[in-house]
Amino acid sequence: TQGAADFIAKPFTADELLAVVRRAFRYGALQKEAAAAGRREGLAYVPCPPKYYRLGYVSWLKAEHSGSVLIGLGDLFLKTIDAVAGLELAPVNDEVVQGNCCAVIVSAEGDRHGVMCPVSGRIVEVNALVKGDPGVVEKDPYFKGWLYRVVPTDLDCDLRGLMSCSSDRM
Image (cartoon, rainbow, N blue to C red; front, side, top):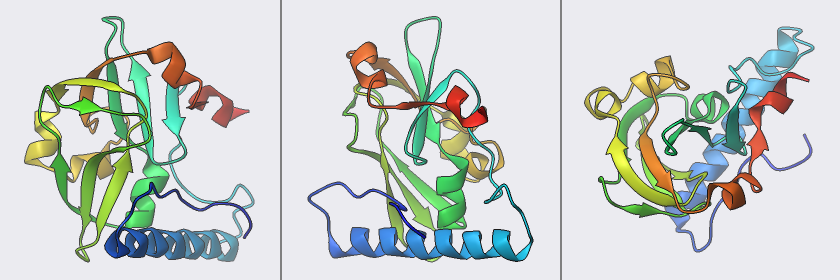
């Protein structure tokens, strides 16, 4: 394959690098499975819905009418982790920064996978459903499995660094 399989923010630890390498290997295995199954359309994953915006395939945001945004995890990113055993989430009132780590997924193997935040702003709500049952992010990543509600600092600026999920359907 050619191109980037993932991102890693600097500075990073050896464990963070190892987690990215493991996700890249899992991504390659998913590609081989798709090819072996004869899927011309490629990997089997659920793309984020229209009107959502994504930061690579790691995280997404959905603007709400109230001016806040919901933040969650992309299905393809979750598939490269394989199994979510736990989530480490920031508390309400924490400030998050676009491109920086805003949460950590702990895999069944014990790897810690940092989640790059798609927006800068202040967390006003943490999804109690995923705090109680981290598996919800895998079962319903785009609706019930959101992580945070955030009041963005400058949404228009942050959107310029994201991909519209509506373009995933062209």
